Amino acid sequence: MNDGNATEWHEKARLLAEALPFMREHNGETVCVKYGGHAMGDEAVADRFARDIVLLKQVGINPIVVHGGGPQIGAMLERLKIKSSFIDGLRVTDAETVDIVEMVLSGSINKQIVSAINRAGGFAIGMSGKDGNLIKARKIKRTKKDPGSNIEKILDLGFVGEPAEINPHILDTLEKSDIIPVIAPIGVGPNGETFNINADTAAGAVAAAAGAARLLMLTDVAGVLDDTGRLIKEMTVERAKTLIQSGTISGGMIPKVETCLDAVRDGVGAAVIVDGRVPHAVLLELFTPSGAGTLIKAR
Image (tube, rainbow, N blue to C red):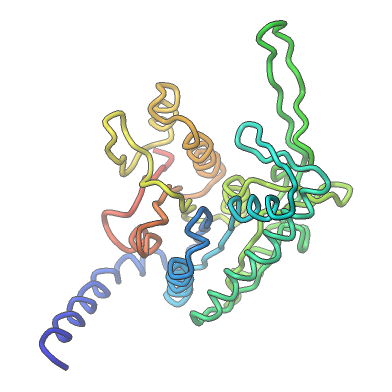
């Protein structure tokens, strides 16, 4: 081994030693990771994510992966020449579209993630919220006020749902095993209907049901920024609500933060909005003192 390689390996050994207290702190905990965005289409990034998830399991942490797939669904609908629209960021999902959504999420995407984790040395099993009634769903209701008449109009999003109940038995059973669950956000309705569920919302509900110590929301931005554009490393639920009211947290960041607030309210130890584009973002968040995104906690 030459001096250059020796220096590199010494640095890696030092980093592992510094990570040890954090590994011990999180040993035995459940961490729910919402994985999605355009990073899922990058094979190198996907393989790196898979290795990080396997490492969590190897050091005694119980990871649960809940994934999205909006870009991939959009590409498939376009390929099949099926038009689709959005209301408040949710894809309007008719009977034809929900079949495609289920095919893409529970089929190709889910199995790609499972295969990547298994290649990295893990033991992943893919499922959707329909398996074992893991995610019982109800239809989402949205209303919109007509600016002229001031009358509220009910908007029909089709087969778009939200979690009504998470089956904890499945999550408890998997937690006691060496299995890493990879969950597609498809829910089952009271009459067996298939519902498309927003992946952020599904991840928050699963994290709460599993009693997770952390919910990690991997996204395509650095985290929550203050009014000067600087990253907010940590904040309480109350501060998050204040920033939403003031407009500092706006646009697409609002539903992500609200998912975090709901998860913390429902018993998750803390929720973190993490930049999934950063290499090993999950490990940086859990095993370093500075973290890798914006952590939201009760107080």
